[in-house]
Image (cartoon, rainbow, N blue to C red):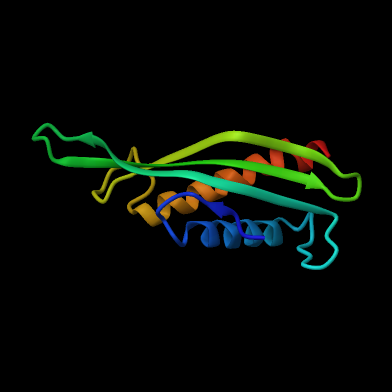
Length: 131
């Protein structure tokens, strides 16, 4: 199921869903099932922030930060119980369009993709590995 989206970024929920599905497929520990699944991940994207994070000495924008806030629930449908839930998860990443060794990403898109990877890692660490 797609994530609910309360942000102004209309494609964000679809991109997040696709990223989570692709991450589970690459990970291989669980199989994606669209009919009669054993578990489900659901969530709500509550905010998306893109802001200036730093300036250089001449007050030119040097760095940006993307922050995504969401609630997420991983539910075991067989036992009808929540495996893991976080109702106020906030993940962020910085990027700079300029060459800078201290910042790994050079675009907003790259920063968002890294946030999605962090979310998948958080889901795995807090649910699947303890399930």
